[in-house]
Amino acid sequence: MAANQSFSAPLCAPAPVLSTGEAEQLVASFLAVMDELAAVVEQETEFVRLGRLAQAAAAASGKADLTRRYLADALRLQAGQGNLKRLMPEKLKALRQRHDAFRAQLQINLTVLATAHAISEGIVRGVSGELARKTAPQTYGASGRPNDPGRNISTPLAVSRVL
Image (cartoon, rainbow, N blue to C red; front, top):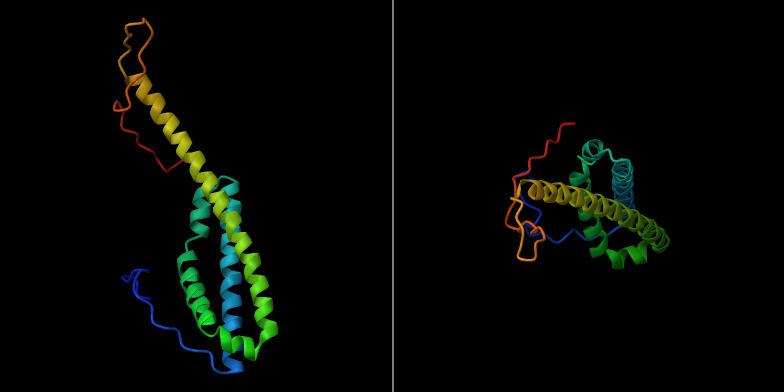
């Protein structure tokens, strides 16, 4: 896929798998890509767990290309599923088991990423709220208690990514 094309471009129908050799080559390619992607995801997950976000981003730099290759092979496997069942049923079963393990690994990765996102968002919201509270005028209401700053009072917040 060219660099200027988007992932939302229409996909062509994948070529059917016709021979045992072609099926074995496709399965081997799919397993290799899945293993590479699993290694990248595992490394990214570990870096995020350790709070090393810059290293996680660097480790995941090739993830888009691997994902594209993974999806292309997965679509071809799906399109040739009938022939694959006929040509190599035992390998197809092993492939499904390996794919289920990969999906579990992806779920862990997504959970770690979502947790890191929620934590960082909470920190930024807390800092922003504290800045707004400190810069808002201190006024008192009719009951004599301090008024809370309104939601529309906000101070711009700049975040430096260089630590």
